[in-house]
Image 1 (cartoon, rainbow, N blue to C red):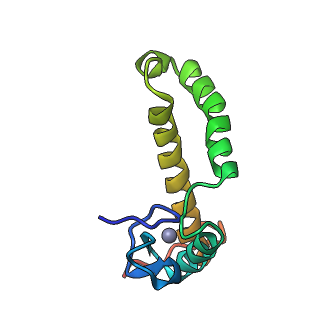
Image 2: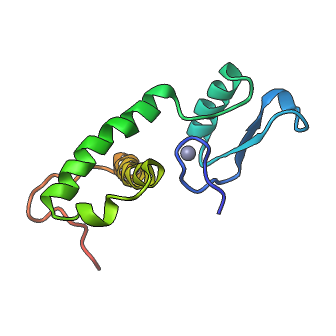
Length: 123
Ligand SMILES: [Zn+2]
């Protein structure tokens, strides 16, 4: 599976290469027109490259503290204690990506009213 260069979901046929120079710049794949627009804008600002922004990298580092607190509260710190920071960051990124994917998918659907009988009739 190839992944989107912006959001890490599955890429679906959208792409960008800086200045259309395939021999000089990497070819970035995207999941959607939205991510292609964002990713190509980033690549144009960064000489054809798309990397985590400094803010994204800092946000993941900052999340390590809360992650460690949750592990400690749940008595799960021992299996994680000797893992590398990259391993911990990978877990945090996976959770954040799953959360953001869900929010994006839910945002594309009409929100339920919260009443008892607002599920679609199953027949
Ligand atoms: Zn994407």
